[in-house]
Image (cartoon, rainbow, N blue to C red; front, side):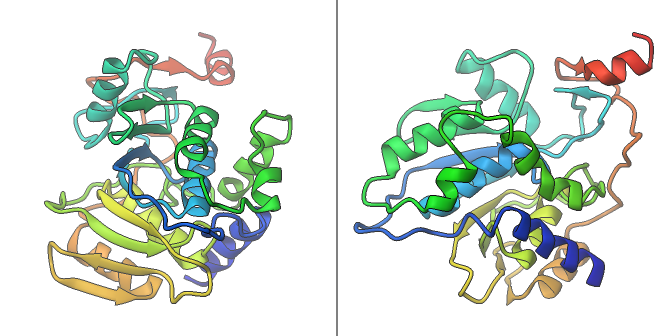
Length: 271
């Protein structure tokens, strides 16, 4: 646990603890937002930071990977990727599933590009927000060569399959869990990683770093507690049924998604 907490703190430090709610001169709006994402994705991190800065709650439907051999692949054990693929297809997005994917039911739009999602959120829900200079520097409206390295650095510090990257078998939750947390908080990150791997749908409610974090409520069992250790023990005890898939996990069979092998991997395999 010590190594995980230390690396989680380092992951927050490399982003300069960006992502906590900014000052607002007006009450935060309450749009109906559904975000399909997975914790280890750099581009999903950008959207989560924006949601945090804006103080916007969202229903998170985690979509961890079942294989690293091809993008867009998923099998029968994937709980939310079929729904994400259907939402993307209905919106006329790319046939190959990619993340993040935001469904804004209030605005009636579905977006699948992180920059477009962040622009959308600021345009519609950023009124009265004093945007931090740090967030402007880390998440500029125009992409730069530093975007990916800076977004990917937290994932490089936590490269393990169970760190919000690969799917782990679990018992599905009938009702979404509720997580009060902050993108930059080390404990909140550990809980989000577990929720992601276990594919447990949850409502994310941003809180400042000064608040007691994280706080997890599970209406399926009546569990409610502060602290990452208690939350992780509850998730393992109540929902987990196995370990996360490994880095070398094969393509799922049958593969229900349109997969594209990473060009570097394809070259190594001679394909």
